[in-house]
Image (cartoon, rainbow, N blue to C red):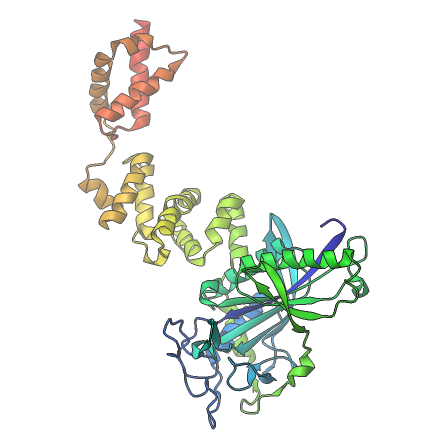
Length: 489
C-alpha cells in the first residue's frame, strides 16, 4: 500500500442449509424458486404463535464454534434485536448478542493466502434467524418469506486482515469449513453467504497496535459475493486514502455504506448504528437452556478433518505437491473420492493425477457433482491397475475412461468388449517388427545406434499396425535389438 496500511474486519453471514426445518419454526429449510412456499405462522409473526428452537441447528452452530477453536457457552440464550424493516415481519430479529457467550467466542482461524500462513482472531460466532428477501423493481418491491427464519451463522472477526486478497482467502477458507462440517453449501448464488466489511486505514509508519493511530471505521453492508468483497475493500481503501491526502479523513464520521456493483462504488447509507440502539433484551418465549458436557463432547468427537489438515496430510504423507493437494481439498466430496480410492490400495500420486486431470475436467464440463459420477473409486482402481499391469497403455487408459462414461460399463468390461488388451507376447510383436522392417528399407538404412531418434518412427509403425495394442516398452526393446543386429551385420 505504500504510505498507508489497512485494517479490515469481516462479519460473515452463512445460512445453515443442511437442517430439515428453520431455526424457530417447522417450515422447510429448503432453497426454492417458488416464492413464499416454505413458510409457517411463526415466520410471518402471526399473533399467538411461539418459537421452538431447532436442536440440529444449535448442534451445527456448536460444531462450527469448535472447529474455529472458540469457547462454548454453558447456557444458551436468544435475544430480540429490535428494528423495523419490511423484510422483518416481527419488528425484531431473534439472535445472540449481549448475554453470556453465544455459540462461540474468542477463537482463531489459520488459513493460507498467496502461499503464506495467516491467522485471524474470532471475536464471536452466533446463531440467529435470517430475514425475508426483498426484490426491487422499477415501480414496486416484492417480499419472499421463504428465507425468513432460516438458521444463520454470523461470524465476527477481529480486524486482523490487511488486504482484499487476505479477506477473500479467509472467506474461501470459511466456506470450505462450513462445507466440510456438513453445515451449509455456502453457495453465494443461492444467497447463502453474505458479508459486512469494516475498513479503516492508517499511516504505514505508525504503530498498528495503538488504537489511536487508526482512522474512522467504515462498514460496508451486505456484500453478496467474494468478488464483491475484494472490490469493495479495494475501493474503500482508495476512497479513504484520497480523503486522507485531502485532509478530510480526520473529520469523517463512523458510517455504514453499501456496495453498488453497477458503479463499482460504496454509497453512504447512514451514520453507524451502535448496539444500544437495537434495545436488545432476552427473548421471553425461549427459556435459557443448559448445554450438557456429554452433548458437547459428542459434538466435538464428530468433527471431521478439515481441508487445511487434509492438505498438510496429503503433502506430508503422500508427497503430493502443494498445487495438487490444494485442488484435491477444495471440495470435500472430491477429497473423499481421492481418499477412498487411495484406501483401496492405489498409488496416491496416480489417483491425484486422474482426479485433478481427467475427472475434474469431465465434471466441470458436464456441470456434475462427483457424487453423481459413474466412475466410482473402485472403478478408478480397476483402470489404474489395468495400466500398471500393462494390460492397456496410458493412452488407452484415457480411451477406456471416455468409454466407461459413455457406455456406463466398468473399465474391465470395456477393455474386454473392445479388445483393447495390450500385446505383450514377444513372438507376436516380433512378427510385426519383421513386417515393419521389410516395408521401410530406407529408414532401416538410416538407423544409427548412436542417434536412435528414428526408432520413434518404427515404434509408431508398430503401434499403427496393432492399433495401439502393442506394449510400447516391449516393442521398443525388441525393435532396437533387431536394428542393432542389422547395423552390425
